[in-house]
Image (cartoon, rainbow, N blue to C red; front, side, top):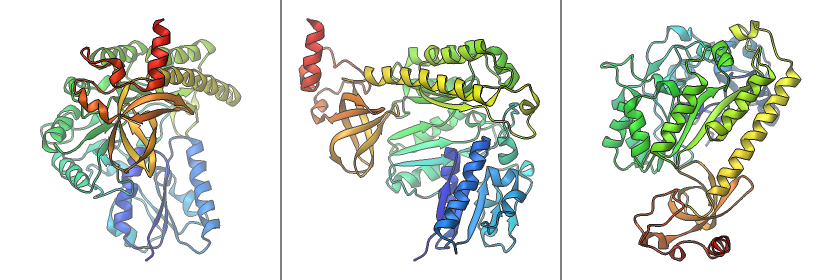
Length: 449
């Protein structure tokens, strides 16, 4: 039976929406490219994906949707490989996919509500992505995403909870809450609930959910309830991705960000003090207009100051129509060099973090057939033997290599219920030898000597 082929580029929100599109299309034999427009490179990748799909299946119908298609539908409609262009709001409606018009793209800025388009299941049977918010009311000077996603709007809590419960029933062990500006959740809903209140309701009403993860957050908008839950509730994974963008105050001001460097460092210090095992990720842009070497150095230093171990580094990319595109530009080769320096600094920090986890206990969700998965801190772990996909394995980390951890399943750890996942120490009343792998015990003894 034919079925749609969906090529997803970009963010986790696109991943969630691609699964909804899959269900709307049913057995329709079409290739859908769900595009991204966060950088010029992302738009080029979208065009490349379209051409590759056409070469692979010359007779197939190709539909393009997503942010790049929403922002510039005419250019994609003009591509000879493209059959249809569908807007970002329209792509979540059955009628748009059944319409005869070659271009179905409305004014995204007029969209005021987000219907609960929640996928009933995901192709990946372990982790599911749930859209709770869409759009953005902020206007950072470098960003074109509001023109692809529209203004901020939220999914009612009841619909979110029902959707997550259905995903858990379908076998998903972990759910990731997604949105364009996740911490803007709620003001457009009755009672103006905060993101913290939504998370609290999810945990209360879906007790069978094993793991809840949050996608990118704006650090300045983390409300007190959300902070308390992230640091106290063990079903919320100890992994937080912050939209920091830069580590220099002047650049942050020119980006029109709402936080300072000191505020970024302060929120991470508060989080680490309350939950030491939390792993920090961040987006950082290299070579923003007017950036000097000293400013770039401040961003590199932020990697250590905020203990960033999951870094997404981007060389600045001009987006037409944005204020930053009219500012004095940094030469492209300088942007690339500064991005490489940021990646090197981030790689060193990550390597130290991974090495520091050797000997720790972790809970790993097995995601691939065989022996691969992620710990709560989102470190990838390769296990010592095949495990069933969708199971959560308690392991001891015995090494780090190839940017991942090596774990040995440790069923015997059940004898020590006081051991906190991520801790490098067993309970005080238990001997280290009861849970630590042999070669780690040996290394520890050598260090003691």
